[in-house]
Amino acid sequence: MTSKKRILSGMRPTGRLHLGHLVGALNNWVKLQESYHCFYMIADWHALMSEYEDTKDIRTNSYEMVKDLIASGLDPEKSVIFIQSHVPEHLELYMIFSDITPLGWVERCPTYKEQLREIKGRDLTTYGFLGYPVLQAADIALYKADVVPVGVDQLPHLELTREIVRRFNTIYGDNVFPEPAPLMTKTPKLLGLDNRKMSKSYGNYISLSDEPIDIEKKVGGMITDATRVKLTDVGHPEACNVFSYYTIFSSTDMVSAVKDWCQGAKAGCTDCKKRLARVLSEHLEPLRQKRVKISDQDVKDILNEGRKKASQAAGETMAVVKSLIHFA
Ligand code: TRP
Ligand code: SF4
Image 1: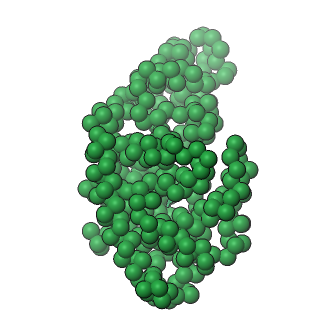
Image 2: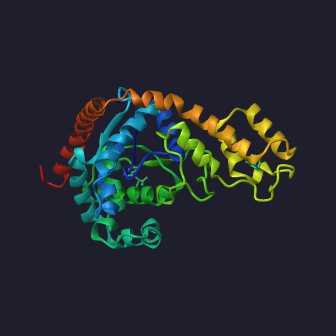
Image 3: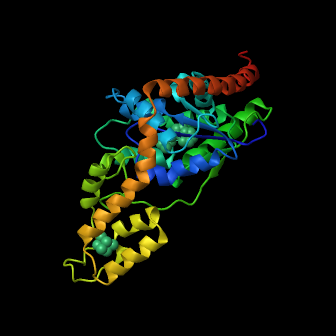
């Protein structure tokens, strides 16, 4: 176990996990558990940074997230699954990193400026939110992660993490922290049901815990090839989001069949969407079955175990860090 490289990644418990998370991150997390020593974290402090005015769902979302993670194939025997705030060392290292991070580094961070522009309905011009990537750097460094699986949107945070740990290593010596490398796995591009980016705030997603009936309703509302108005019009699958879902979630035979009935005007879009709903329901069925078997007590047990293992690793790092800054 110790010879394996370490991975840390996290997700914010701001809502339910959906198909976008599954194909964009979770499936990959599941594979990585075989070859890395993985720490998967529920980033509740990061959730608080944007949800501070309405915090009542953060805990429930965290527990539901654990269920989704396990149902998707994360194995608590292989990976450390834990809640960020259960391990107080995150905040200790965050404090130290805050002291060595020049203000310009965080002020210039492109994600910071973008979020301020894009996230409406809440005031993110807070002291805490500016420090978002510094806490993320602490998350990663605390476990001496070598590798961080992230999407493109998180690359600036990883670059900042590398700069911060380099600065720490330069000031205090000893090369305590490895410079973490991003792991960008090619993942299929899944748009939301309305052709925009799949996102909680747009409400345009299918969550991992949706029932077949919800899935049918949601898929029924998807936008299809706009040039195909009547059943007798030929369609253009490559211009249709419904078709792109087939390419991700169904067999190649099925994909050819859809192409054929669409381009040959042999089946209507309503029919096509009904079938897609079935495909997606079947895809999620094993997850649903696994999910219902996970009790609230199971979640607590998994998180307790995770807290212990994460605390062990975090404690080892902080002992070294504190001795280096003469706080031991
Ligand atoms: N910022 C990440 C996101 O929004 C979540 C996160 C917090 C994270 N800490 C992390 C991801 C550390 C990777 C590593 O998706
Ligand atoms: Fe899209 Fe299917 Fe309609 Fe073709 S038949 S346009 S793939 S929904």
